[in-house]
Image 1 (cartoon, rainbow over the protein chains, first blue to last red):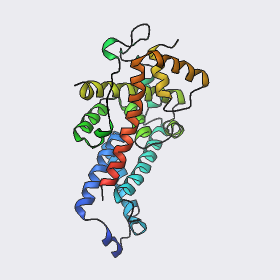
Image 2 (image 1 turned 45 degrees about the horizontal axis):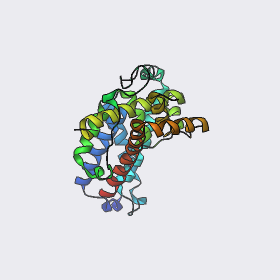
Image 3 (image 1 turned 90 degrees about the vertical axis):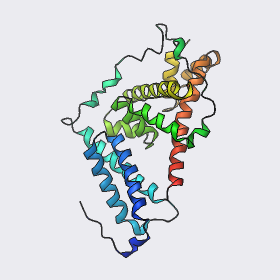
Image 4 (image 1 turned 180 degrees about the horizontal axis):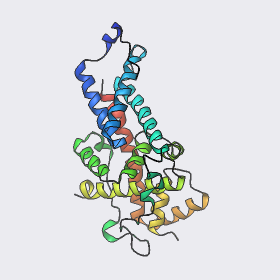
Length: 198
Length: 63
């Protein structure tokens, strides 16, 4: 690890309190992504060092947090890439969740079970600011099997393309699509019963 | 005619790739007669847009 050379131009950095808060957000994000506390710490540490090292080139108009998260996402993708290319460490490339049956949402003819049929969620725009909603969202996300949660977050939060995720995790496109399908179905089912149809 | 289960898979795949003409036609036909799958279509789109706007929001509200 290269230590950053911080000169006095670092005085235009935000106060330590803000940095600590950003760091804690980054750590929560990395833990969720990597499901490994040590690797999450490492990724956050490397991202912080990388971000501070280039602090002088930091554009005031963009937020420091955005910049740090961009670096963190890159580090996480890198960690996942290494992890999944090492067959000794992980055997998940066989796609554990791909063959499991769907969660009894459909009857034998493939029609919605009456209690599973999607209902109107109404206007979801106002929920973006609703902290309680995001707590429920996080709970639902945490209930997904690890592999489903990981690909869902890589796709929807990090906004990697399908192609990039398949490359990183060594999945076939159809395996990825099955995982994303299951993740979306479970997430919407969980959100429906714990928020929208409360 | 697609079942709801098949339609729901296509609705998720639609977020990932451009559906073939045949798939789009079959899905479109199914959606005209199935309110549950129409809602699912909206929910999948809402999931994506809510996550994206929450990120923009996080980034704007931070320093």
